[in-house]
Length: 342
Ligand SMILES: NC(=O)c1ccc[n+]([C@@H]2O[C@H](COP(=O)([O-])OP(=O)(O)OC[C@H]3O[C@@H](n4cnc5c(N)ncnc54)[C@H](O)[C@@H]3O)[C@@H](O)[C@H]2O)c1
Ligand SMILES: [Zn+2]
Image (cartoon, rainbow, N blue to C red):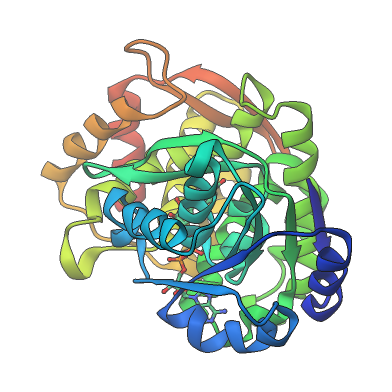
């Protein structure tokens, strides 16, 4: 897999110069159809098939996969075809999954168009869909032929969506680069050089994934903030207006899990306070009712890092350092969520 950070007019043209396909389909949702496809349309062969799906996590499911497979079949796509996933993490995860399973697998490339997808979802070959309310429950590991990142795509994103992606940038700094964490926490979101931070995050994620592609060990550090973050995201998924974005949930998860790290003497109180104040400043505080805590904790039972009944976390073992496979009890989780809420 090659990850290229460059103007898309250059990277996509080079990709097509170096690779030949019998047919090309492009997967978009209504927003990337409107904002992103026009940017690359002229670089695609004139007979490409456009597959348009509805945007949002809500549609990252088997029914949407069926639509995609149906369109690919009707376009007579053979095994020498290519699927171009143009969109955020939902398009990348779902499109990659559809391509990897269509006729036992065809090539696909990721052109991530949200900050979250550029710094995280598009890199590392995790693909999949949600199932019966469980996030990324069905999926595969499969690397795309290329990941082509152009920071320009994010110009049309809302500030809320950009901040959702920024949470993963913060995570990458906290688990691997104390110096960069110290640098970003001195700046407001508006002051940050996002292009530079995209490259920084991609380098961290690539290095970790290269060492442990299938998440046998080290890769689990990328899940810092995600055990309880995912549980909260899942819990709020069907709660109407209370639904939050992935990165917003991870921001909560990072505060809660940093608290657990502190309780275990892995980080100091000052370090915890630095983390929580920056995250509260950027993401505010989400309200949860006391009686919801046990329902959220129950959802961690589905976490893919668990072994048997043990709920295993990736916890900071210092700033810029992270451990994994650390069992955490329900009472510790409860105390940590209560800390967040107060
Ligand atoms: N595979 C992985 O390793 C991995 C890692 C992190 C997250 N994820 C997954 O990624 C998903 C979240 O990704 P996301 O935050 O990108 O969500 P998303 O794909 O839903 O995109 C967010 C919204 O932005 C719109 N959009 C996309 N690009 C745009 C642009 N350039 N301008 C304007 N609007 C645009 C989309 O249509 C959508 O409405 C989740 O499903 C999560 O599970 C996967
Ligand atoms: Zn994430």
